[in-house]
Each structure stands twice: as structure tokens, then as C-alpha cells.
Length: 317
Image (tube, rainbow, N blue to C red; front, side, top):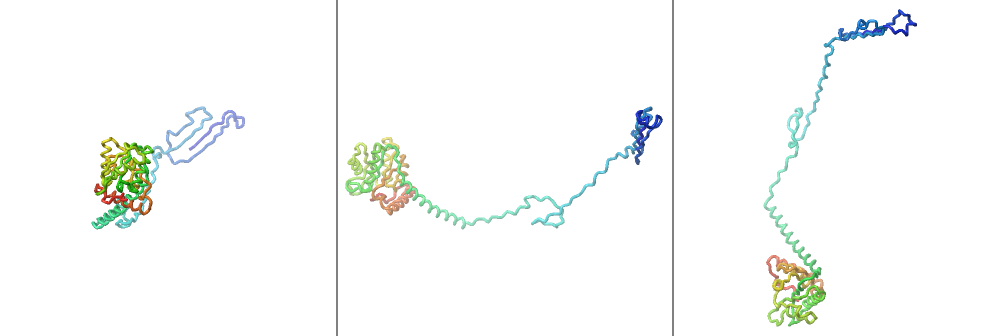
């Protein structure tokens, strides 16, 4: 490329003379051929002392060809040697299915009949042991409760009587019922119980006379002179409740007898609460208490299974 500068203008004439012309020439060598589009000649600007001429020599369209693209680099990953994979180690790598990389599922052996029988027997034995223990605890827990909601009647379950005189166990129940009546828990007291062969008095009648002697009005006492066990006695009480339109009751018995009495009464449609007597021979000695709880547990299961009272009376004293 050649660059020529002609003249520096009138301001520098005093230093170099009027006819003196300063010329600066720049030359760049190029291998390209001249192109008419890149030429600028002084003839295009006549009389211009300050005109600068630039000349660029190019090779035309051939020199404007785009550069060749860089070569593609190839990456190679060695084949992984996976456990359980067959084939030579130089086999080309391929995308494995995740299912093929998992451990093979273990095949369960079918359970033998003997094992099933043993487990079933063990479960039954465990149930037979635990259920009575849970019932025993339930009997003990209910015996410690004392519920006194306002009710239609107080029901006193009978016990032994001796020629019209209540036994110590029966007398303890009657005394507690009289106390509940004085508190206003219910306006009526029902005494229930039959007699043994050869007796001249019934448990229900003996109990009613004892309450009247203690100051309970006679018209507030209803004796039921029948009933040989808890189930029969509460069935007779339920008939009286139905005749009078009563629905709720507070049952008075021994502490350990409370749960079974309440269960039977509710089966006859009576909404029953329990308020056991806390005095008398049935609650004095610890050995007697444990014996009564165990017997009541067996009697309760007998009732649940067979729907009848146990043959042995709990209130034999």
C-alpha cells in the first residue's frame, strides 16, 4: 500500500517556500492483485493540495474465501469392566439398562405347612395367656371405681341370709345402698335375690326389711324375692325397669363383682353404673381379694362364651 501526502497548506509556506511541496510516502508490500474498487487517484480531486491517496492491492474474490474449519477431535472412553458383564474388555462401550445392573431378586422359598402350624399355635397360646390377664386387670380396675350418677333406682344384688337376717356380706351392700339413698342418688332401692331350698326367707325380702328398719321409707323399697344367680336376678330387675319405664341404675355389690354385674345389666338394656361396698369380709383380706378377682375373671369369660352364669356363686359368704 502506498500513501502520499501532498502539501501542508499555506501556513507552512514561509518555512519551505511557495513552490516547495512536502511529500510523505508509505509503502506496504502485498501479494494481492490490484482491485479497481480499492483505488483512489489524485485525478478525482484536482487542485486539492491536501488530498491523500490510499492504494490497497487485493486479490479479489479469491482472497475472500472463508478459513477452513478446525478438524473435529474424537474422544474415546475405555470400556468399563462391570461385574457380571460378559464380553472382552475391548468391547465398545454401550449404555447399559439400569435393570440389568441390579442384583437379581432372591427367590423366596415357599413356607412349609409345619411352620405355619407352629406359628398359629404360638399365636393362639399367646392369646390364651394375654386375654385372661387383661380381663383380670379389667376386673381389678372396675372394682376400684365408684360411680354415683343420678339414676332411676339403686339395685342391691342379694347374698346369703340366715333365717331373714342378712349375712355380713349382704349387710355391707345394704348399708352402702342406704347411704346412696340418703345422698339422693336415686329415689328407689331395689333388692333382689331368691332363697335356698329349705329357707323361709328370701334374700330380696330380707334386704328390704333391713332397709326399712334402718329408716328407708317402705314405699321407696321394691323387693324381688327371686333369682338364684346374677344373670337371673338382673333379668328380673330388667323386667321391673321395663314395667316402670326406668332406664338407669346404680348397681351395689362387692367390688370384684362390679364388672360382671354391669356387663350383664347392659346386655338387658339397663344403663348401669357401679358403686361397690367397701366394707365386709369380701374386702378385708388381700388373699380373699385375689381369690375373688380370679374367680370373677373366670365367671366373666364363662358368661361371654356360654351366655350363662357360672355354677359357683361369688357371694357365697
